[in-house]
Image (tube, rainbow, N blue to C red; front, side, top):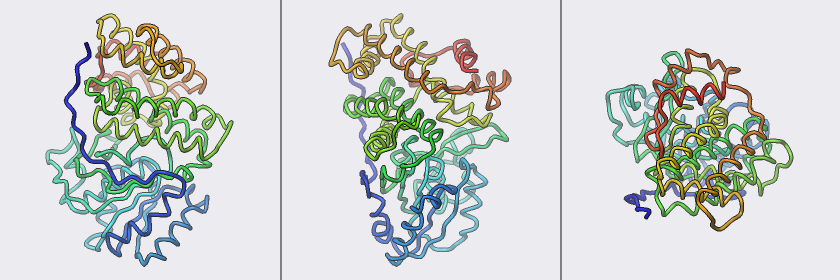
Length: 391
């Protein structure tokens, strides 16, 4: 008999989802005051003409704003540099319009504008201080569908010189508002669509099968997985680019963020995180390569251990992918692995050695890896086998 985990449903951002949601940004930002800090990505937002429209709306709402362009994953030096440049200038609201890295950077900056010292002092596993939770109001506007950072309480900060990728985390760092507009993701390059989408899928699978999974979120998670399975392939392979398909991926990414904040992640992200800190492999691509071999180990283990609750969760995904309302659990687990294998192979992902994953990097990643929320733990030897598979 399956037992229920303790339920803890904390708040969500105020979420506006749908085509045109970004049009709400000027009025919402103005509700916090007149002085805004806006973080955007590289060239794609401006090249699309969308930034010009957003900027005109901000000015029309009577906002005075400064813009910083974020062109890489957030580092402590980048975050500290932005807060130092702002000095004591008043900032009433921070808005991040971009992919997961931009939103994480904005989340961290909004926190550090109200915190003393370097962001490094507050990173899990790096610093010695606990964040207070004080922050400047923060609005997240994702332009990709992947990390779900618009619905999480942490910001990921990396430093490859020391090989870490760690979180600044506090419940209060949840964005105050998330404007999820699928139209902003139209025209996203196929490799970016793929990497982001694979991250979302891995987050959904791992959080749905986590030992901390909450039954209250099972239905939206399964629906999000089905949406991702339906939409990512045509989007990432250039077969179609419609608001309807983009909307399904944006929904999947949003739900993945909600899920991971409550149930945590497993061995896929437990390995992908250290790899991203040690070599320049795109996070989503690492997740995509690791997903099938990790899940093959995990599913075999939960079956061997007769872990009924975990078996039923994997079977539920397999049956959902097959369009079945139920069926034999072991057959459902087989359907899950078969569908996952076919699906990930169709993307023809490159080996991770192309991104500098050497034997030395693999050994370090295994030492740093974490899979505490997985329904079956992978041993260091099994993690090494997984990494050899994707090398």
